[in-house]
Length: 105
Image (cartoon, rainbow, N blue to C red; front, side, top):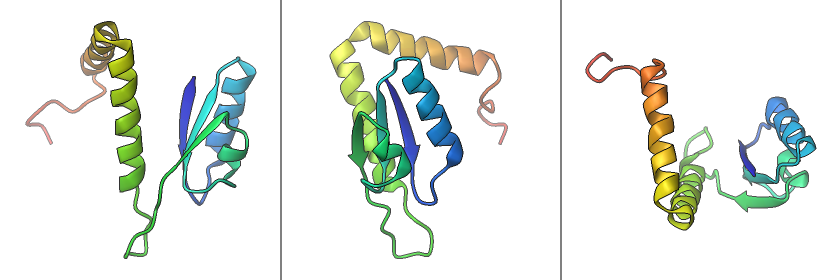
């Protein structure tokens, strides 16, 4: 299973990556702002979120909430082994220098 986030204007890259994942046998979950978004049309499942905002720019707040809820549900279903795997992956990212060290803005 692979999840992709895409909102208008839609990214060519996300469509290509989702197609490659499908070719490898992965299920594709689209997180998007429209049922007719290109990624949604090729997905096994689509989770919609609103991008409505009083400003000129679309808001991704609802999309982030959907992602957080999905991660929480997956971790709850998979249990402590999944949580340990996530902690291990985060630790590896820290050790590899993927994040700025605390206090070093």
